[in-house]
Image (tube, rainbow, N blue to C red; front, side):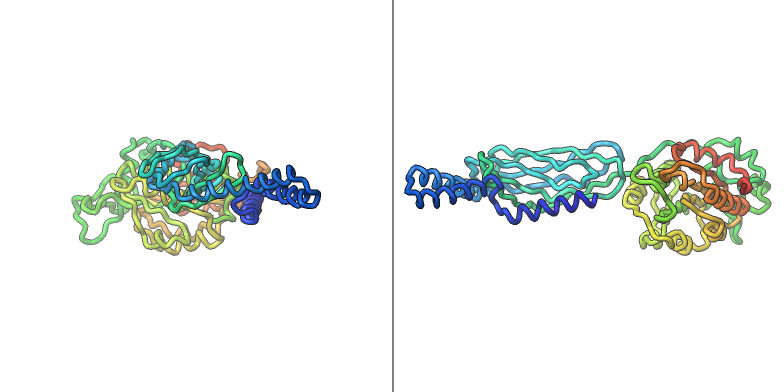
Length: 435
């Protein structure tokens, strides 16, 4: 990427030095000047005529293209575009004719980030003043993110290619490439590992929702809201969330530390985590639960912005599309921003962690809050796909700490399907002891 940027910078500097004339135009100027000087020295009239002709051609080209410089305006750009990763979308441009442009060629080039494709070269036929023309080109990207196309550049050239005048037209279009969302099975997650989860594991999809909607009894709660089955199973009085308060909130914690992830591009462990967060968030939102995305360094999330499923189902995807890697303190800052969580459920997507990283997570969960964690084997996302004993042992110790504190855990490796990892959380179970 850096070489591409340096190359484009050199090309821009070369264009600034050449001015409106192309290399061919300057070659004619040089040849005409040499021929004219030689003709005067040698007294050759025919050679002088040739030299004058060579000098006149670039001048005529300059006059023609300069007259057409204001022959078009950009009337309208398309509205912000949203498309899932891997799919194509269209950018629309509308130009309006404002004057004559005889004897020149005109085309429009839009500025496009390289991840969205190549810059389009859109020819524009002659337009009478006031007439508009709709132009369209397509973009696509395998990499989620928030991008912008534009500004467009109007290029005017003569038929001989001696002159190339460029004019920048204001305006840009936002393009949000959303992370991939995978369908997930409904799994019961309310029981902590080893706490009599046989009944929960045999529950239907509604059990997943019911477990999230429960909380501990508080003085003053209506006894008619006591959920006796969960009370008997957990050994403490559990009540359903007040229907007037809506569904219980789900906190989705994403570990975005740069040092906790490996791999490049769409195949990196961070992109797997983002896609998993999008899939889990969409899965729970479809069941009516507001999802709050949390990571360190984001002021919006530290303020606790919730995303109601019924009104802003796509807002979470836009947040994840703009997510960028953080520094080493990102996970700690996210946990501090949450404090002691009162959410209906905690879901953590973790990169490379050890037992020390997971200790603050243990304090987030109270006994009545279902909590699940997906730990990634990020050392397998590197170039050498070999088992590294030290990272694997650290992962197992972290899994053991979380499991012992009542979290359901699952691990993810390169190539694992997100739906399979999510389904494995239903099996829960204590973490394996480190080898």
